[in-house]
Length: 213
Image (cartoon, rainbow, N blue to C red; front, top):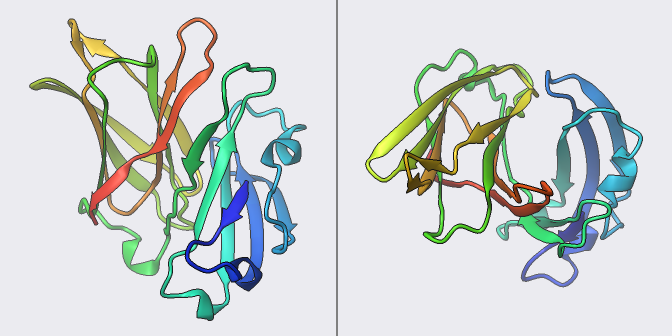
């Protein structure tokens, strides 16, 4: 993971602390590391290489010197499966806040995110990853896939720090997947994923875009 601070060449020196935690699918913390804030690149694969879990949600708690604002610090990463010949995928790390007291017990849909697909297919298997970064509040989320005028909905419950990968059909009766949407009481970590059918190699890894919160 490489930390990049836009518009300020010296901003990387204003990162006060960086703590990484990893959580299994049920939300249990399985790894915690304090990362030297002077490091610009962090090899996440090396840190997690000994873990047996199939999927982990990794959280970065980044604390900044207040002088870095009003510019929003930007973190991004390159994703490259070991042994794959495909080029690494660039993606922006999802900035997410959760678990604030007024969200506990919330039942209203306060956050809606969406992702629109290009008309021409470039992946053969799609899924959406959802993670609840809240410390205290469970999330009742909706995942909706759109195929032209048709829609297919899924209900997903996520305890604190839990995460799931929900498969989404690439087409419905010959009509291609055009959009996915998530709805939740507060913001979740959400990514849309595309893989090649035979190799399973990633060709798409991107966060959904918030348009209601």
